[in-house]
Length: 317
Image (cartoon, rainbow, N blue to C red; front, side, top):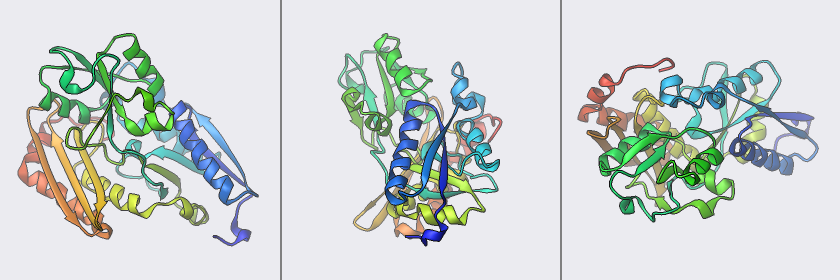
């Protein structure tokens, strides 16, 4: 526990205003209040550009960094001390002047199949419309279920579920972690194991960001840092970083520690799922960053470079 003299009187958490983002911010707020009851901990809710533009896919408007920039601006100008992000929304390169101070223990990292009429992807009739916001999910769906129609699905969790309930889609795919955090587990029809749908980089984990000059906050946040999750997420991000990972690149990476060994899997795909390059490595958890780089090079050698070269670079790549 840090010296009480260093504990600030006040900590302001910057957060997007969606229900899920606010749940995440309130969760961190609660944890910090338990640790530092003498500190006033408040939340600064913000609407980001990514929340405002809902009629286009993220891959076309600049990627998930659109959910982050306004929060970082609040850190930079001193309106907030820390920002809470879903790690799968974090760009692979943290901008200069900022740092990831802590990564929390991972919630369920899997994707969830949600449907009001069908029990599984296999049960969907030919031509059924499946909604997803992610090129990663879309490429895997198109590869394994070419008979289905994959359509874009934007909006917060509640908006996506409403569109399903209005029968705009036969099924939708969402992150299981978000549904569980919002106490919507009853909406999960089936969980997709990583063999069916390899998760997004960092899926299920929360990251706490602060300015690079706030070593005091890094120390304060260490009780919330979960090292096993961090090893896994850092390995995934390392692989994605080498491959230019963003919303414009259909890729997935998933690491888990089994019997003391970090098992890392990854893939890069064409958006239409016609070609997918996959790979896996195992090693010591503390070597995860190097493993991620190694796996990326293996995927490149196996043809991922050809897939990446064919993708049109977008702003923010």
